[in-house]
Length: 176
Image (tube, rainbow, N blue to C red; front, side, top):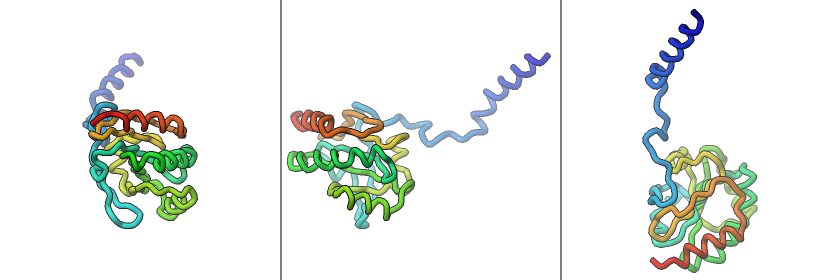
């Protein structure tokens, strides 16, 4: 008599649970991935100005989600900065989205100062942009071509300068 009761409970749980638990923010969204257009967003920067992904239209973009407390983020930032300096004049841009809802602005500013970062840093203060990109681990990097198409999604790190150079050079060499 115990097994039928357990089965009845399990069957009831399967049908009732979806009605009791609200859908997650990802339920109707497809994760941005290779071959799809990169979702647009606009965020505040440290200087109070707004920056948007569309500001870099026509460029190869490395979109990096990071936080100052993230060890792999700290490890890869010098390589990202060097690649940025090497290829910016060729139509390459780095857009670093700080997970400001999980970070503090003084820590972000200190991080930028320590590593001498000169590329645009946007602040995701609500987590909405990270949710739009379905970022579940830090760092997460999207390589986006000149047409705004995601060419690669890289979860985790640190990314090496040699790896980034090879990927960026390949995207920059493509004809529009």
